Length: 64
Image 1 (spheres, rainbow, N blue to C red):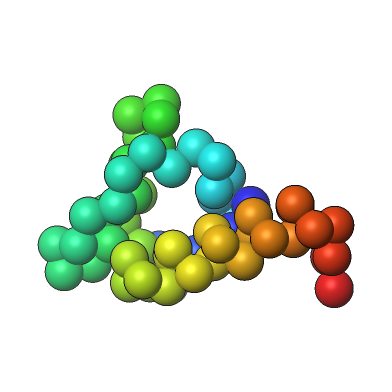
Image 2 (cartoon, rainbow, N blue to C red):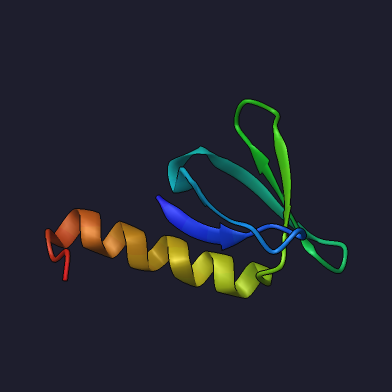
């Protein structure tokens, strides 16, 4: 799960495993595997970094 910020400045958490596609329009448009779409303030690069950090936590068991 990763924490993101919507265009309304509200923070929400999304399942990183459900991300199918990222587009920059210039906001980031996230498309999930179920077809739902979310516009967020974070850049595509920031989202990718958050997903990598999340995956490292899961696979290494280091939750600090």
